[in-house]
Length: 110
Length: 113
Image (cartoon, rainbow over all chains, first blue to last red; front, side):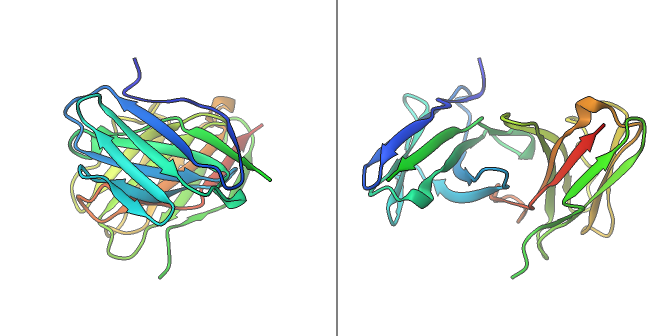
């Protein structure tokens, strides 16, 4: 079983829709979590950290469910520019325990 | 401010040649990572530097791969006797030590023919 698992998608959603992705992690010792965004043929860019209490940044909301060992990313009012691959990251302590998921592809269609 | 920079952006080399890839991290970031990403695949951890500590080389796929970081800043990843399976995008990321928030460079796309 992979340490961090994501549905590869693609998720095809119309503009203005709300979409949510989940990411499961297997190591219960994981402490820090992040979402990155990666555009086609570009580098990953940090989107947001995921805090235990959940956090929101504009149209983006990230949540952590420790009991079920998953994190989620909710995007409201999807824009065409949101089309990208979203990578989740879990850290179980120390740099060597930073694990990237393989990403969920989102395609927002007009 | 300036982000992470990498050079060259693209490199085409013949099988068996050596290549050097360079990474300039964000000023003040003490941690530096190298990753490899093949087409449609996730990030593969290669090596990690933190300050003046000995690097963690546990992710290097073979002894043909080596890396160094001079003066706690610029890093060079060297691949000797390149093979076709080394073709990938090599990404460098820097981080304020301990935050685990990584900032990536644009990568070097390596093609071994």
